[in-house]
Length: 329
Image (cartoon, rainbow, N blue to C red; front, top):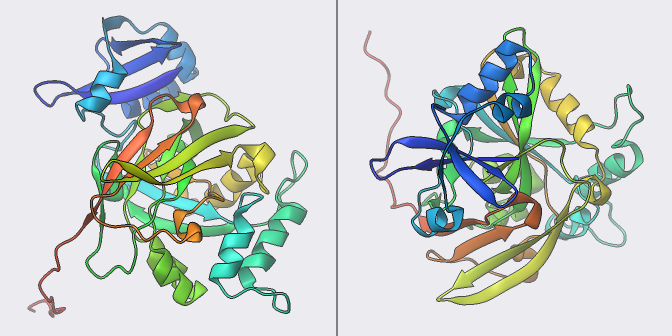
């Protein structure tokens, strides 16, 4: 099963369920977030809830993509209660590009390589055990989440705006603080790799950017071997076209281990909150020497996730200088 959220001709939100090749609106559904919270309150799986949900009109998802009517596959009604976070150095091929970016060499073991080796040695613990802690980063609140078809806007001060083709997990927090995994979607974990390359301690700055998600949310377990494609188009020509791999067969950490180390923090177990967690990648166009420009179009696809995720690169207008003012007493 795959869930999408789309807008109709009036701009109203509609929930779409795809089963195989057939996609239909769900009659009476207000949002995918509400469906997930309903399933939790009723003590049943989301799949079981959807099996009983009445189907409405058929939907052509390819046409929805052409018309730019995809919304985020899941969002919180209050963006301040929606967290965009992720983990890096989690894939078997992710160390080489990062190590080169951060000054690794034959006689030097960078901190990035040390972190990667921790994952190789202990990122997939036996059931019931805690594994190695991964690198972790914060992207921003829900207002930083961008749907398929919308622009990924790089700040005016940014040195780069590059794609990162990833898989994101979606989690809602139940009334008692229990995290519930809803599903997974494609993600473009858009970042500033030039800023990061200056010093690995700038990674936190480089990640404070928007990220794109969707367009379809795959329910159930994550496939163990995901084979997708990451492409960049400029003036109708592909200037970058490489495969990307994900799923646990291609990762140095298990999904369960990454989930544990995120949700072990009480701040991330607040009832009703929504978390979109990005699991990392080993494929970056910046590693191939690509310098992106405004107007470039990113396309991330994988057969397991339905319609591709497409977004254009935009550059923010330089904002007026703002001074921090003292509040009047």
